[in-house]
Image 1 (spheres, rainbow, N blue to C red):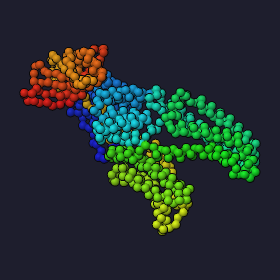
Image 2 (image 1 turned 120 degrees about the vertical axis):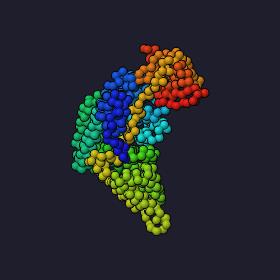
Image 3 (image 1 turned 90 degrees about the vertical axis):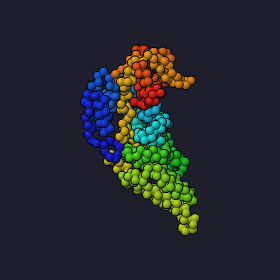
Image 4 (image 1 turned 90 degrees about the horizontal axis):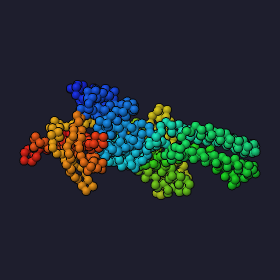
Length: 621
């Protein structure tokens, strides 16, 4: 279970009536709430087997079976069960939602998942779960603004929805899933694009390392031994090896039409490829300018323009990998809105996923604070002016405010107790701020004379210690296989908490009184939304009421057109045998062109008596 706190009972009692399919469905739902998908699947199978004609809402049994299959990792069977649920109840928002949730796990079927989920939103805009799944699908594609809007729609309908709350925090952080290079809407398996990505990463790594090692040897031969001509020829020959590596790796990429999209979607894959191309260009320029740079060096003009240009080119070849790594750490630290994300994670109560994301986000906040103090220390050191350090005390104040957004003190202490390296990093940040701030305040008060260079060096030393702490924490996470202090350790919430998703809820049934009224009524009124406002239309009759409660209406073109615009309708009927009784069935209308009827799946049933009697009005579902 993802949720923390008191554990639910391990056992579920057998259904009171072993012949009742709905009782078996309730048992399956109870097993799912206890994270026992195997037992839930067996109970759902019992429900389906006892309801072969779908007389008791068999789509509920298929929906529960689909959810159990999904949690067991049997995606194909989950999709098949969800498709059967949609066939039995095409107007059921829960069945559409279940199919959308199952399809999102099938490579290349993201668009179908989106279409089914959008239908669920259209059928039941008042429900939170369809909006939450829309947010999940958008987040998986990196559409953060759309995901944020969808999660907020879900939270307006259910404030304590754990999945929407946690994943909203990820959207605010501009989180990217581990396979960010792959667009879920592409009709290809992500493993294929993953192999193409691996090939490009291998080419980048091999090319950069080969060029760096070769240029180091070439430089040593030309500047140390004076073998300029041989070094230049050897360096130029190495370009042929780079060409062979490039051709070999290019042959392994089978998805060239998708490569531009992969580079555009994955910022760091594109940056790595671009840095490698820059390294190749710098290497070529360094080899071409080597004779002139070596002759200037031999003449004793080591600080001349030619030597400086060659040194810059060499730096691009030797240090581009490290530069990309540092750039990635800084960019990821400043990406998104971590303080607002912390507030959302904290609002998810004691969920483990939320606590994990709080810890990772605090590391991102630490990275921001470190970079701000590094800029202040650099200004103090370069300008030799301690006055720049007056801004340093503001950093721990902002950091403390951000930590306060991570939830109540007990929860924050729990996160810090689980990560002592994070506590050490926070202490070092406070120390660096005090060192820099003191270097500015003490001279102003006439208590101590400190130069900008001394203050900058002291602050830089403390910040360097924090880098060592980050490296040690990263090494520990890598060694133990734990979540690390980096953005990739953030995770989405899937099946968080004890709350079952809306697609596991029961179907709405019809009582005997309502069925009698529908079967005997001579006239039926269909209410629906029109561009000019609410309308009511008399339809011919209810041609039939299926065993699972679905209505089949014979209606005119106006009703069909209205159902296409907005499928949410209400069917009003009175019982001719009991003239005081009336019923209102609110549901979703879907046209069946083969049978030429409107199929209405009930969402809620309200019954009552006309005024002048008991004036009773009460909902049944």
